[in-house]
Image (tube, rainbow, N blue to C red; front, top):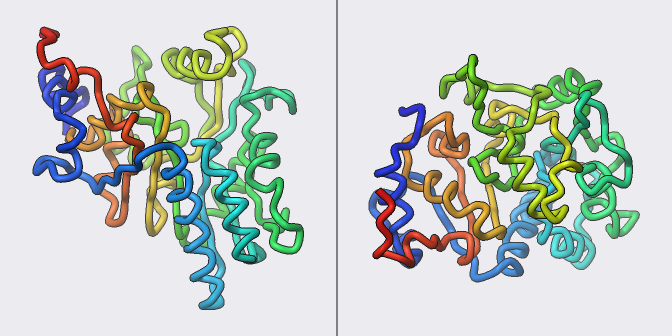
Length: 296
């Protein structure tokens, strides 16, 4: 275990051609490529719908952790549920995280980073009413619901964690901690639980660039998140990204670095059934496409 990725190692990983990632002998975690965002979205939707359908056939409930992004999978999700007529009556959903204002309060209903509003519109909205997830089985995070959500997660096994990852390899909002006086160990990150936190500056800039024309002034500076303990407690973990450049370096670290608190996604290596899926655009890396660059 290392606290920080060494630049020479990072350069080596980023130089690997995208065509070698699937079969590379030094890859540390299972990996799958999707041609584009549409293919990845279908994979993500079917991952969840196939699980629910199988457990329905066995008369079993399904308990899942779901993210607010990637956003491309919601239309395929709705289509799969509605077309196949899959009942969600026995589905319990734990939402990964929520953004907060600078005082740790919920965002306005119409804010683009109000995750509950987004999920009610795109995840639950558009499902046939007779197939819907009962409202009492939808667990949204806020500072006021932390204890209740933690207790509900601990009641029984989680069947699946779906998610993405951030520019620093955060899963949910488990960001790399960069506080000058507090340095969590890898085990601290692995056992982290639901909490309210400040968002990292690079997270704020990334979200500003992605959604708000780089207007960082409007990006929520705090969040409440499930910890890595909850996310990795599921029987299977599946993370996806179609976001391209924002995620390319974190993907290389996830695939090749030993576990490190600098990139929490590397903890997926410890899970017995984890799989990373990326689009071709997210899996490529500009350093690998410019071998003449002298970076060190």
